[in-house]
Image 1 (cartoon, rainbow, N blue to C red):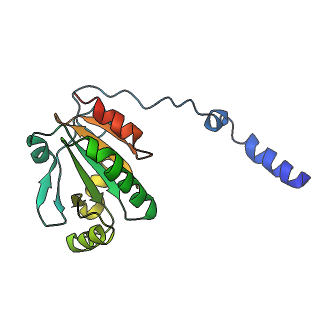
Image 2: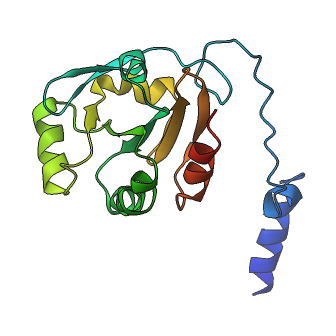
Image 3: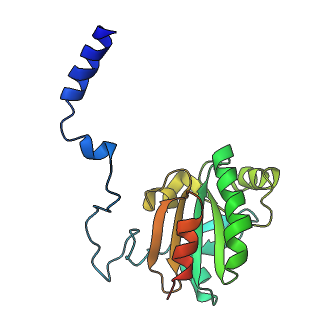
Length: 178
């Protein structure tokens, strides 16, 4: 037991400055975004992109925003149990409250329209449009990970870009859209 304490002490001694990691402030320490810039961070104008949906239709961000809607929501899914839980929560607790928002699942792992359609149907998401992110282009552009949720308002401004937790932040973001 003393050997374990000694090894732990030495390993922690080399980790100066980790105390705030053990009790994080919750403050967003990313640099401020300059208004009017193009990018994928909150406050920036989203670059346009297009992907095929699982029915083979091309879907462009600004074409979707041209249809009178309050926002577009992208949820990056890889068809795992965690993603399924998040997508179910979104479908049951968020989507019904925001009929003027376009929700899309973004499949960044299947690699083809056919494979993505199979995953969409076998996982029970025929009711949510799924986009196929070939080569993970949009995934990389938004610096996403499994479960990343992006909200882009009707003017193309990114309002949220973070991992889905329980739907509360997503609903709050959608409620205060301009």
